[in-house]
Length: 110
Image (cartoon, rainbow, N blue to C red; front, side, top):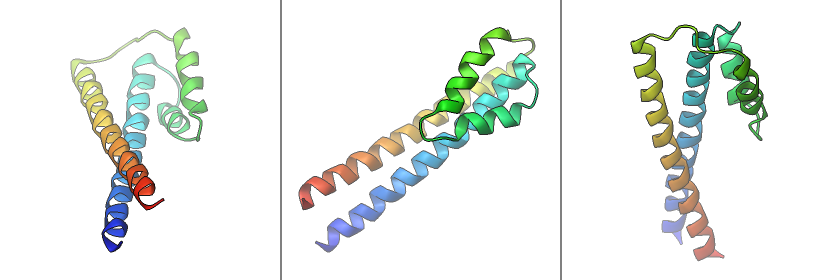
């Protein structure tokens, strides 16, 4: 029984780390994209898209950015964008692993 509590704590840590890391990467990706499109206040757009439970800020940004084509984006910014996308994928893997682990523990204990 004690093993399940330890495993639950580990899976919870995976879940939290994955969620925070993915949210941070989304904030940075949207900020980079907004800056390259010439939108005003790119950090605000990043914050708006990273917050909210139902991703309404991200949906708002994605629908609003269509009016603004990419004006300037250097090769370095493109590389950073790709790197952050991969990092967000790693965060999602941690998030999924923690969620699956907690679900499995819940089933075994339930």
